[in-house]
Image (tube, rainbow, N blue to C red):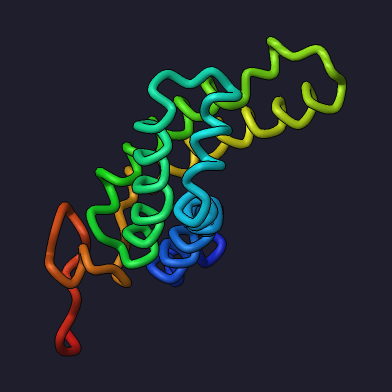
Length: 152
């Protein structure tokens, strides 16, 4: 079976995948950074333990981790962190199985399974690494392919 050309664009696809995975976290991380009181209030509304601590943690992971994903810095550890973050966020913030309102139930069910799906993407990123277009590759870190400085 052929790879349908994926081998030719692997590094470009990894860069695009990193950007696409980061978009959600950059957008919502920025929202948390610019509305800390609202973030704490949301954490309290879903019954999160230590809402002010979790709000700060979520801000850092979402926004600054998103920047790290886009730039390709420590991608494998970040991918594992994000997989865990998605699981915890789903279990704390999207407990659809406890809700009775049809709309609220449905929206939280979507968000819970979105988080599970994102975990799959992060596990794939953990396995593949950042690719050639990353700071990891530039620094020769964590199994990233070395950048060629001249033709073979």
